[in-house]
Amino acid sequence: MRFILRRLGFFVVTLWVALTVNFFVPRLMPGNPAEAMMARYKGRVNPEALKALEVAFGLDTQKPLLVQYVEYLGNTLTGHFGISLTFFPTQVGKVVLQALPWTLGLVGLTTVIAFVVGTLIGTIGGWRRNGIVDSILPPVFVITSALPYFWVGLILILVFSLGTNGALPNDGGYDPILDAGWNGAFIVDVLKHAVLPSVSILLISIGGWILTMRNNVVTTLAEDYITMARAKGIPDRKIMIHYAARNAVLPNLSGFAMSLGFVVSGSILVEYTFNYPGVGYMLLSAVNNQDYPLMQALFVLITVTVLVAVLISDFLTAWLDPRVRTAS
Amino acid sequence: MSSVSVATPVDPALPTRARTGSGIVRAILGNPKALVGAVLLLVFVVAAVVPQVFTTIHNPNQRFELMLPPGPGHPLGTTAFGQDIWSQLVYGTRLSLFVAVVAGALASVLSVIVGVSAAYLGGWADDLLSLLTDVFLVIPAFPLIIVIAAYAGGGNMAVVIGVLVLTGWSYGARQLRAQAMSLRNRDFLESARVRGERSSYIIIFEMLPTMVSLIAANFLGAALYALLTAAGLQFIGLGNSSSVSWGTMLHWAQSNEALQTGQQWWVIAPGLCIALLGASFALLNYAFDEISNPALRPVRRRRGRA
Image (cartoon, rainbow over all chains, first blue to last red; front, top):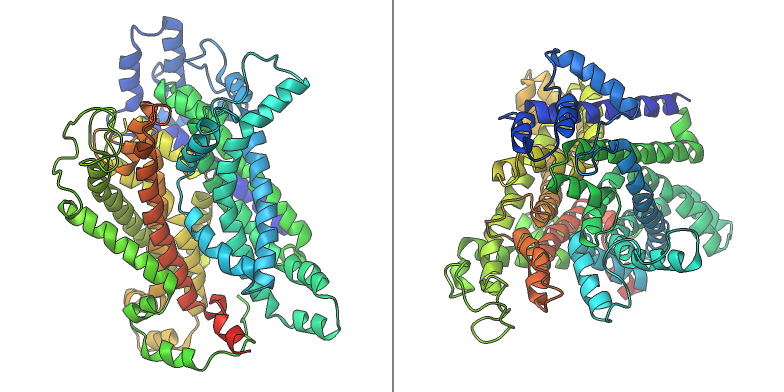
């Protein structure tokens, strides 16, 4: 219980830090980017949009910074991010929510697959040290983990999309000609569009899981209970899965929480490379269009999503590992 | 940390070699992963310092015919602007390597400061610094970098290095803190304390030297992170687009649809260089891991004998 409370506390503190950074970066940067931005926008967007922008950055009021900050925190927590400039006059919150399912589907699913498959391969690698899996895979994944996500995406486009005359699409999340909805053709099309981006993420993120799981299994195999299990004549496969892997996966699970930020960061570039209509792509278009309210809302959204995922994996760890529950 | 007892019988040749070859050069030569990594790194360092060794073209922005295929004079062809791709690649090494090394070094200095002082000070200072570390660890770095770089107007190298350091130190700080914690109650530190040495002396001259291999591994990890992240930033156009680096090459290649117009090398080559330099960091990093943790070393010898 105490563990869960502490993790909840951590969640709140991290969220607060992220929101605070988000508030102060545009206001405290040298040269006041908020004012510079207003100057750029004058005459280019309609006066209402300009007004919305002034409100978002506190340029219309003489209120002290602290009051603005408290109001900003309140607005953010209640989902009021202001009005988007690119999609004027739609609320930023609404725009952002359209992109979220795409990213959750692509990045979320791919990450879970990478974790499960990587853990499985890592278990086998650590169990059969010096076997085929153990001697080939680690060096391969040392290299793949050093590849830029977006470049792998570009190479996949070259080989599997352009190289096959468009057998797999490389642009967008679906074919706009089709009816969007729960019909077979559309679903197949969405899946086809997801293949290359998700393979890019999978190829790079899986290596980390394999290597850490392998090392955890190697360490676990030296424990006395493994020797004991062997002495009792328990079948190898059972020892591997129920004794070694079960114990070795726990540190990997907390590692999952810690490296999620890295995966999400890489996915932003993958979405950009494939013009995939998720939050990462939208974040970069917001940057290019200098749609600052949208950009800030997306930053908050991505951070909150990652933090929630971290919290879930914390709870999973607490549920699976009694030592975590009882430790101070 | 649980004390891990390694039950595997160790080849008698290994410990003697480790003892006599305590020098880092010997360690690298004895480990194939480290050797490959070191050679790769050396090639890139040469390309960064004296690019003239690899190309006769002395200005990477010199214009030739547009979009030439690979051929004599232009081993990788030319870009849509007529620049020679090979010489762009060679001259781009400098900036990419520089950003990676400088940001990696600054980030590891920050990791050492935060991680070691958290472990050494203990109490509320440790709680606070650990909290700060964890917070920076879970906040997704790239969106944060994008937001900061967008407001800073992009392009400024100091800003790029600054955000890379700001987002790159936390992982190392966590590891170093754990290592320093395990050292804290050792006798040699206790005796230094009894001698009446100042904290700063104990940390710098007693603790840090025992952590060198972990610090080196952290530097490599941070440099890899900086290399990939800087390339990503340049790729989306938030770096200085007029400078020559691998990331900006990819940016221009992508914005000129190089893949669709048959200019594959414009895309493949810079990415491959990022991958190779990154791999050299990663290989050296894993080698350091193996050198400092014998349990992870391959056990080929033992099998061979049995």
